[in-house]
Image (cartoon, rainbow, N blue to C red):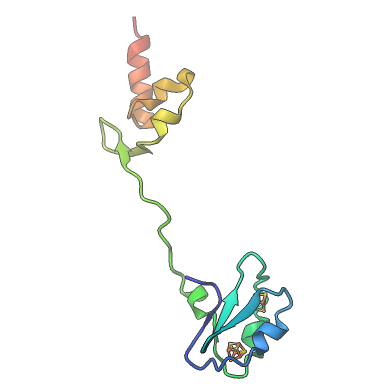
Length: 121
Ligand code: SF4
Ligand code: SF4
C-alpha cells in the first residue's frame, strides 16, 4: 500500500506535485491518462501535499489506523517439556557450533534443570 494515497476527488491539478518540497511527487501523461507518482525514498512525510490539495483528495488517514501489519510468519519451536515457545525453526541452523546446546528445544527453566541433571555425578 502506498504511503501517499488520493481519493476520488483528485482532479489532477498537480498542486501537490508542484509544492512537494522533497520532489517526492511527479506525474506521467501518457495517451489519455495522467498518473500521479510518489517516491517513498524521497518523501519527508511533511504533509504539505495534504495541506495544499484544493480538493481534499490526499489521504493519510490509513496511517492512523493503528493496524499491525504481519511481516513474516515462522514455524515456532516449543519447549519439549512444558510447551512454552522458545525459538523458531530457522534459529538452530544459524547457531555457531559452540552454541549447539542452545538448539535443544527447552525453555530457560527446563534448560537449567537439564544442565543440572547432566552435571550431577
Ligand atoms: S493537489 Fe490534490 S487534486 Fe491536485 S493532483 Fe494533487 S491530489 Fe490531485
Ligand atoms: S508528505 Fe511532503 S514530502 Fe511527502 S509527498 Fe507529501 S509534500 Fe511531498
